[in-house]
Each structure stands twice: as C-alpha cells, then as structure tokens.
Image (cartoon, rainbow, N blue to C red; front, side, top):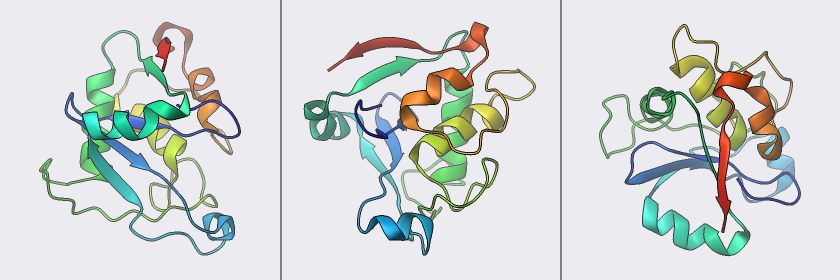
Length: 152
C-alpha cells in the first residue's frame, strides 16, 4: 500500500510476482467506462523498484492465510491455469459492488482475494461499499488482521 490520497494496493501471488490493478488514465474512466485489461503482474524486484520511491508499505496477513489468498488472486485475476501467461483480462472500474470480480480495482482485488480465497475461515469482514487501500487492514477480523512490516 502507498500512503497519501487513496493510495494503492497489490498482492504478492508468489515470492516472485506481484499482481495489481493500477488504474491510470482519465479518472472519469474509473467510474464510467472502465479501463479494459488493467490487471498486471510484475516480477517482485521490478515492482519494488518501480514503487519503493512512493513510500510503499508492506503488510502481511496473520495465521498463514496469505498463501490461500495469493493462490485465489493468481487464479481469478491472472491465469486460470496458474501459469505465467495471462488469460484473465479484468477491467478497472469503481462502480461494481464488493463481490463483483470484473470490473475491479486494486484494493477490492486484494480484499476479494482474502474474502473468497480463504475458504470457510472468517478472515475479511463485511461487504464494504468501497475499499480504500489505506483502510484495507480494517476489513479483517482481529485474529487475521495484517501487520505492517515497514515503510520503504
């Protein structure tokens, strides 16, 4: 996550890759028309090199639920075969509800990965109308609430 403004959120799908919905372009498209094919995956080192200058905060989930959420994110938002080749093409958009996976936006994608991807565990809370990146940690039950590793 990035501090300031709404911020930004992404999820590590493995130790080697970071998945994000970066938005960009005309802000009117975020809410009205959407930005097609906006999901992107980067090698971890590349993502870090591109984001560290922006005061990146690293957060980790508690109780070992991260790998389940990461697995879901990889499958649902990148590749249905868990491969390196993208076959999911998600539109960036702010208008759909919290459980709609396409269109989507950065912090909603991360929240959904924990909501849907952790099975019967009560990890993520409720159905928030809009999930800002800076508020993501508040949408977890206390025993699973992520902890901040640091700011870079």
